[in-house]
Image 1 (cartoon, rainbow, N blue to C red):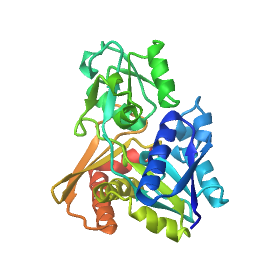
Image 2 (tube, rainbow, N blue to C red; image 1 turned 180 degrees about the horizontal axis):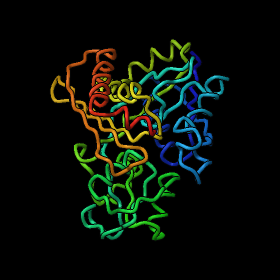
Image 3 (cartoon, rainbow, N blue to C red; image 1 turned 120 degrees about the horizontal axis):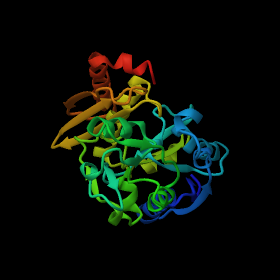
Image 4 (cartoon, one colour; image 1 turned 90 degrees about the horizontal axis):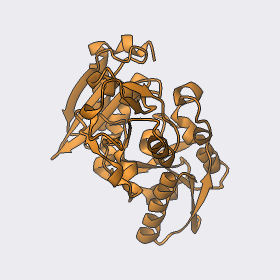
Length: 309
């Protein structure tokens, strides 16, 4: 393994914070010399269309994987919720770090919470997962797409384009913007995306020494929870065009997994929900828990919903 480790990262302020966090971890824990390789991805460039129409969240990671493949970088740091459920051949998820707040945040300059919004208020989000859960509670709302990095989304709110927007609490907290949060949606009210709030580290499959090193950074509870959550999406063929949520929480040695699926075109159709629990000791057992949740959603009628995604 080289004496110098290069991290490929997107250049948004949040992505750089995440890469710097991993850099500092590698430097302090292992004495590694670490540099950042900033890159702009297609996901950052295409802001006028929904991700589901132009290739999905994989657009945020493809250029970083190219840098790993050709040797310009050794690892890439991602928001785990942006990482496709199945990585391309030759790449692996080497580590998942301890999760930040996984909840969704209600951000508004005028209103305290969702219930305070007036009839027909405009809420910004480009996440179908958030759209169907918002409309299940407030079908009167007008939901408008909101793309761009975190600062861009906040600017659009401040310019008056929206009455409120919904963002991941983790990103706001990491950038010192927790004061912008008017309230958070508890996870039983708005189920987060698989992996939300966690950072994932991707490397080449053949980077065995680096994988061994990074294995020491894994936060085991988050690692197993993320495997369960991601297995739900993998089993159902999850993508940006599927309003799917999955979130797992630990209670002692028991992992509680809740999943929900909305209809991709009939956005006010009833949400399908399924909850299960287990005590997974390894990744395979965690994945089986996720597959059980996916099967529960199928029995609740997911096949009809999936056909429209």
